[in-house]
Image 1 (tube, rainbow, N blue to C red):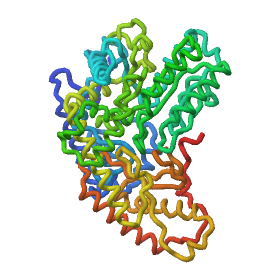
Image 2 (image 1 turned 90 degrees about the vertical axis):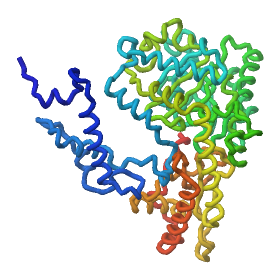
Image 3 (image 1 turned 120 degrees about the horizontal axis):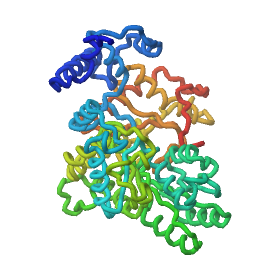
Image 4 (image 1 turned 120 degrees about the vertical axis):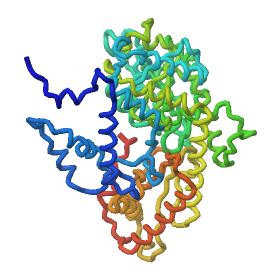
Length: 539
């Protein structure tokens, strides 16, 4: 019989004492090692370059494993270059830090390792999942007993679930026979590229997704939607899903959900359809703003500043119509302050998802995945229970106020131009203003120069080891005011952000601009490699 070495057995949780001391010790040692190598004035972990990238990339499986003395060193190397999301200088696209209790839950979920494939492998995990689903359904105005949902691997999956359910509505036999009809999906021109990807994965085909144009504020054009639906139905096409925005990342502009639902219902009668096209709202980023649906903006108990209050109310104006949707998705690992992955697909009629199956026993019959971790349900349950409605309100109000403050300070500097002043969320998009120079003035086409100039800011921050970490956006990216040139984006998501950290950031930008101006060639029309970014919405 094989004698299992002691050092191998010690790698596992010990059933004789159920002690997590070795886990905590390894965690502490690893974290100490990470901080020891990290410059805490920078936005990334382990910012020293010590050749670890090559060591990891050239990894090969050893004959004998490493000793416990090396665990902390090896594990800490896995986090080299990861953003310090809690740092206010980190203003990259929508990855807020999770609240600590959700991190504890995720750690212990990994230790006890439930599988939400079925009830016997998950303890009470499926009850937690359905408890969260029912609570969300009830809060948005659905019947908690009739509604359903499932946690899944991301926002793209929530869209996929929505389209798949819609596909079964317009083509009831498609699950058995495949897609035999001419099926299409409607989205909007500012919708996420995942909408395109999902019709590919589902076999509908990217030629069969129609992106309806939006108005100047990036809301879907209702007249164009009506025209497009009528034209496609007359052509004999069947509509698997109508996907609209519950609030996009850059501007948080919400499509008029109730108006779209009313249009859909009216056209079902006018066109004598024998099915009701599925309406899915892509609310993965914006959902937490729904917690303001009962907020008294007149009395303003949180004392939210006027402009921030106006923006929140404007988002809510259409988002509160979420109850009219047939389904929607939420990424709590975005503005829900939970760790990855904490993503849930919500559907008004649970039978369209799981039929008459007992959702607390056999989800593997109706979910995309079989193996599903309990991370998402546990994290979201805690986030909702600990923060509550008022906690989410306070966080979002604070971040909105800080966003307004940063926009104002950047604009007041006269060195940068705000290009998303009509945005409502926590994103600030801006470009550096070109110096007044006769050589630049003589240039016929300044687009290349302006793109190169803007890109230089992101490049310089990288070269400096990321004292600030912001996003660089391609031209005409989605938002309330599509802009034709490369821009910079600061996304406010840390509760540690403040008016003081904003002032330091703007001062940094002004000084960086002076430094760049000394060496930048404003007459060079050659496209710099770092200024060429693929546009995710143009496929």
